[in-house]
Amino acid sequence: MSIFHLIEEQGSNVMAQVLEIADLKKLAQRRVPKMFFDYADSGSWTEGTYHANESDFQKIKFRQRVAVDMTNRTLASQMVGQDVSMPVAIAPTGLTGMQRADGEILAAQACEEAGVPFTLSTMSVCSIEAVAEKTTKPFWFQLYVMRDKDFAGRLIDRAKAAGCSALVLTLDLQILGQRHKDLRNGLSTPPKFTPHHIWQMATRPGWCLGMLGTKNRSFGNIVGHAQGVEDLSSLSSWTAEQFDPKLSWDDVAWIKERWGGKLILKGILDPEDAKMSLKTGADAIIVSNHGGRQLDGAISSIEALPEIVEAVGDEVEVHMDGGIRSGQDVLKAVALGAKGTYIGRPFLYGLGAMGKEGVTKSIEIIRNEMDITMALCGKRDIKDVDQSILM
Ligand SMILES: Cc1cc2nc3c(=O)[nH]c(=O)nc-3n(C[C@H](O)[C@H](O)[C@H](O)COP(=O)(O)O)c2cc1C
Image 1 (cartoon, rainbow, N blue to C red):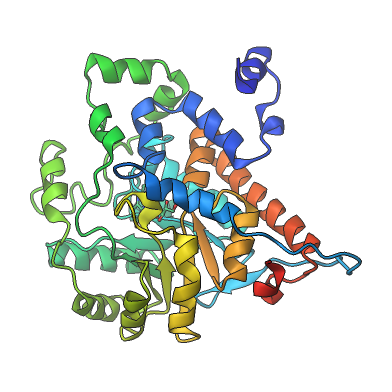
Image 2: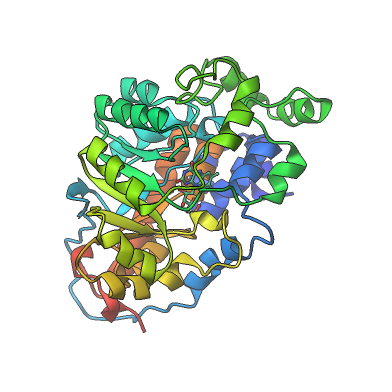
């Protein structure tokens, strides 16, 4: 019997027992229907790159320093010119509102309280407008480029109208990597009502109750906004047909022009592509392999980071995501030159485990681990962290 079975049976305070991201993952697995938990906890094909993203962090070692003043520490920094309480943002993730009812709204609210950016996915359940209505600070919007350029353009306009303060343009999903778990689970949004799916949901009564209490149960940015998508039966075929396999660097130009604000390019894993990105005038690039969900067999993000930092120098801000499961991981990425990082699964596990409180917990776990590690490496200001803290 796991610790959580015991705690829940005894009715004691679960939150006090959550000490690391792995605890949130275990709890999420108990509270989220299998098909949606698996959707988060999966990579493409063998999941080799998914796992390498995490395990490659373990190969990097810190230099412990002693007898240095560790008072007055700060993690405050900036990402694309915006103040952040630490260089960690929430990564865009599709179907977040299926981990927990109104998931995108809850996560965005947790982020604004924590002083870190929240990035809303094109494939979110809660729409841009729904999230804007329930938050008070600007969030970021992630764009997938569709063949229907008119629709993509209108998404950009809607993000602008909602006051989003940065556009994250994802470049690594022109076609979809195959994730075996999703196919085996028959994943769909909203879920199908086969006996198998009904059983998965019925065993998660808290989740069901939440879903019954919200109208956000589909792809909020798309249904009713894209031509020909008025109901859900036409949506799945629309999605499969719509991602643009012809996306090119030239598209970045019109998107930048139409958006007119801070632009971040997501999904760069190769130094040559990083150099290409310089010509676009983007404000930042994210070294990312989509959390190991696209090209299985590609190198981990943390392994790719140093060469990309070297290739672009100071010409563009370099961010990274993939495999961050602790504040120590964030510190290693910063030491290797990342000016910002993003967490995907850690916040999804928090959300599935305990809603907004769980997202806050995931952020605070990472903040605390980063702060203590920085101190033990002999640094007091995140802006002074560089390769010298590593062996
Ligand atoms: C469940 C899930 C859904 C995702 N959906 C999107 C998405 O809609 N758009 C996008 O650009 N990236 C998406 N990603 C990739 C994340 O933005 C990010 O690159 C990745 O999660 C980082 O790795 P990590 O989960 O190990 O932190 C998704 C990732 C996960 C786990």
